[in-house]
Length: 432
Ligand code: NAD
Image (cartoon, rainbow, N blue to C red; front, side, top):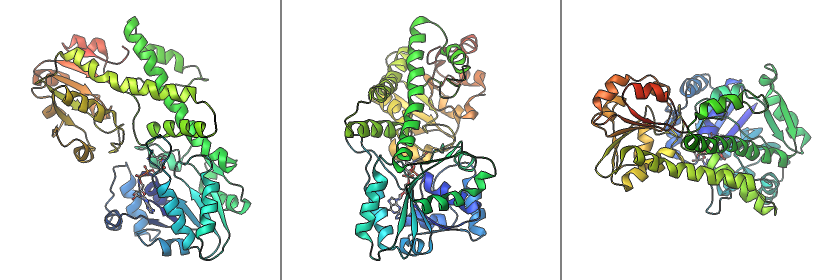
């Protein structure tokens, strides 16, 4: 099948590479000419494990190409995925300008029946809105189907998630479009992936609801962690006891500095905006957002409590990306924490295995270290912000010896408090 993917960010690039891997003929389109030039040379602009190999393999096989020429891509494609960004507006609602712009361009170049699929996370009603918008902008009147096919992949495990999803959601009222989508995803039938065929609106809402629910679990356990800190018990024990209940599940019950990234903060706010638009309340989602903001804001005071006056102190920060295995810095807790430390007069020396180039664009005022040990050398405290695997087995005796004062704020609870205290660290975690 001939496919066009509009937008080559985390989602578009993975979608394009994976559909090419399934044997389709895929053209990825972006307005960013620089990005397209680099991709055409096989240079992947983001860090996503396995993506470079998959892209190279499929480019070599002639099934995957990159272009700024949307017209040709649309003319040749039967299925067109919109995978452009939907950033938040000031009021929290999703900014649809990129989606609308892409949809208009697609409409202008339609030369026959096409299936237009939103992979971007879009508010309820966007599919129908795009149908009207595209009809207005068609130069040639041709039929087309509109499908919502939300993407549930996790950055850092995106390829595995795309190839082995828990489910595929296809929302549409166009029978022909649904049949084509089923055909496109046929390789996943072989591994018995469940398909949820719904209305456009239910598919659109399912993505926001899923992300808001996961964010709820995080804010919930963060609130319990803060209670544990006051009580003096270990939130990990509580989370384990809770999570073994199958109705609750173990995942996303890990306390920390609050959720970040390109999805949860934006999608919770967008869901609240959708509720407002429909005259409904969103009490739970509102609370999830507020708990997260408070959690984020509580991290610097936590560090301050450990270190004392931060003025003139050097703080080593390990981990910058919003989570491990990605270089994505969007809404990363590290940014809020580091800015708070700087405001209080501290100097920050940071290390991250992959996100330092991205971080330097946002945080040019801090020092970047070559590795973990260089970061902690002479530091007054060490703060773990992202739980990269390579931070889990540091040579702690060496760390202790290198630091000016052995103080650790472990905001991801990667070490055991008792062990750390035995090793001579002044140690604080989250809810332990
Ligand atoms: P991104 O910002 O990484 O990439 C968007 C790309 O679209 C950019 O390369 C941009 O240049 C391009 N673009 C913008 N307007 C364009 C146009 N008119 N024509 C062609 N290209 C255009 O975004 P992302 O993280 O890949 O997210 C894309 C969408 O997928 C968002 O709606 C997001 O909420 C959703 N989503 C993201 C994730 C994730 O983990 N990142 C997961 C699931 C869903």
